[in-house]
Structures are given as C-alpha cells and as structure tokens.
Length: 213
Image 1 (cartoon, rainbow, N blue to C red):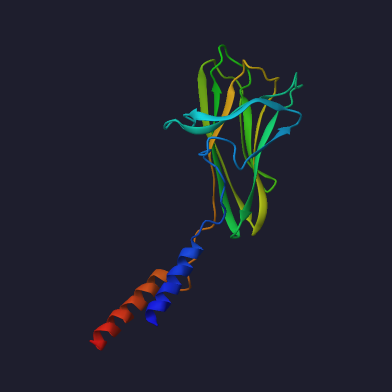
Image 2: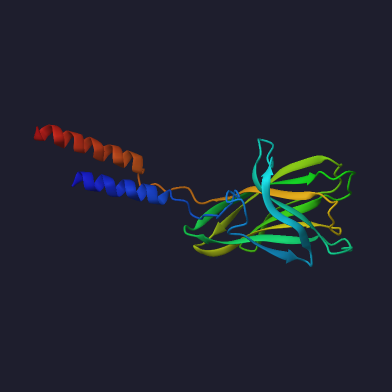
C-alpha cells in the first residue's frame, strides 16, 4: 500500500513538471522547414528559404533557417518580408517564456544602410523586436529575442517576422534563426512540499519493513 502511494505521488510530481508546450523542429534538426509555415508580410518576399549549418549564437555551427527578405521593389520605408509561423498547443496554463536566437549575416561585399529587423510574436502579442540599421560587408550581427506571456490552455500561433525596408536581391544579406523554444510553468509542489512528503513516506516504509522482520 505504501509502495503504491509513493508511485502515485512520484507520477504526479513528474506530470506537474512536464513541458507545458512543444515546438516542432525548433532547432531545424530535420534539415528542412518541417512544422513551419512561411507567409508574406506586408507584401514582402524571400529569395532564399532553406536550412543550412551556421554559427547563429557564436558558440559553433548548427542547423539554422536562412532567409533573404525584403520587398519586391522599393518599399517606401515600410519593412517588408515574411512570417515564420507554427501552431502550438498550450497544455498547462501559466507564464510561458519564448526565445529565439537570430543573426544578420551580411556576407555580401559592401556595407548596407539597413540590415533588417526581426520580431517575436505569441498568441498575437509582440514579445520582442530588434532592428539593425547599418551593417558592414562581411560581418555578422547576433542577438536573441525573448519574452514572457501568461497563457491559458489552448491553441496559439507562434510567429517570427523577418523584414527589411528595401527591395531584395541576390546581393543582400541573410537573416538566420535557430533555437526557437518555449518553457512553460514550473512544477507546483503539493501543500507542504512533495519532496518532504515523499521522504516521510519512505521513512514510514523502512520502519514498517524492519518491524515485520
């Protein structure tokens, strides 16, 4: 009886700590865009949308999404590009932290007045934004988008916007993104603290075994 009780309590503890949401292919480990959808943003487009090894964080190369975004012509100062989106299920209500690593890779010769911008959205709420103006030829700018959002159980859309305020051509730089993740609420201990409760039950069990001997 005591053994059964311990097993149930451990199962409850592990279930409470289970991930509250899962992003498919957040590290682009499949080598393609499995799980993701690309759509235009404000009439923009991308000339390149593939997955290739790149040092997005500065800690070493890994698979990352590569985009080459902008407008189909002069944008009139409007940032145009694409949305990268995925529908995810929130299985535990509470505060969730969303995160993504990005890089502006301007490998083209010559500098540019506007590298581009990237934004992070969850459930229609913009959590973070970064824009990089001047960037010199052959350089890489790295950063991280992150933000917290209190969510109820249900289905939401996670999306990132990649855009530039200029037309796109094979001579412009790339947007890179990797390590897209979400971390849900922390486990909630039972009243009094489950670790102490388990320890107490374990002590009772040991004492009972000794008495039976």
